[in-house]
Length: 436
Image (cartoon, rainbow, N blue to C red):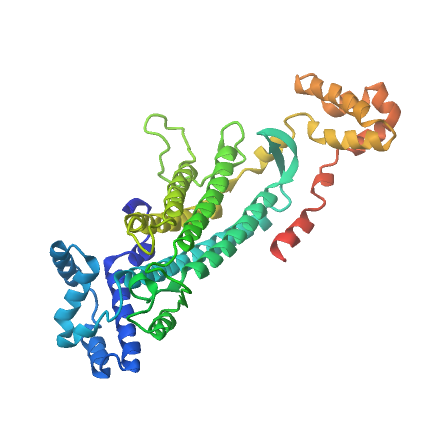
């Protein structure tokens, strides 16, 4: 994580102040449950809350770090520092628990918090896509396959497609959030030998988590693998949008352009440059988020009931992937909301190939007139290739082709060059996307 690609709210989730606060709540709620069972005195549980429930300031964090430098164990350093505030009743903290009970449950809370921010980010992006989609719903543009002119679509359909994709991403993240939000307070090797399962249930309820059905001292890492894989899918969707905008901004296309603010500079050498720097940046950030997916998958296979090979990985990919994705979603929302569309360039590109965009309709009409598909393809292609080579307009060539005219007539051929034919179902598609 670097500050350049970070936003404060997501950074705060991974700050030690938040992490230690969650650790304290796990321990204190567990003490409440233990007191109800009579395992520890009720007065001790009360004291732990009263004396230990203080903000984790920079001074407290520094003290924990100081202790860990000696103990070489983060949870022991935490409980030792907590004991300095609580006093003798601190001996009842962590009764029957193991470090993973604290660490894994805390990570579940943090990932749930991160997911909530990411879901809000996606909602903002969906709003931007929807607004631009309706704004450009009927703005016909060149559709491309393999990067080559194909048939007309509309700019609005592009935005609507992105909206539909990110709505799916929202549903994926909601499912991943639910799957990751589990609590494990089951003790060493997960057998509850030294702690009652009701303690786990109490802590889970207090933290808004589900009970992990079976934790082998650790929460199974397939949950985490799904979560980070979902982040990777979202990142890939960001890159898809970014790549489309980058292509549309190329000088030879120039149908759309990132907003270029007053005073902005595009190149240190060439004063005329207006580069798609934001979407290029998003492409790079997407790669970084996806880089967390394989390590998360490899964390699934741990030794027996517990090892810590996953720990160092998650200490890095947890903050890095969520902070980067949060930043990327916010940046993409800004790009989409402020994207400049150039209708004149859109129309120019639509007409660039002299009417070849209507070739399929001519082909189909010939087959409906009784011409075999093979012969119809031959008739259309031989005229299309002349246009491709710069030798006239498609409509003119077809109306001067005796075979084609013999099957369709000049007037019928002209009727086939109707842009509205290609956009007649746009409203239907919009209803599917936005009203489903």
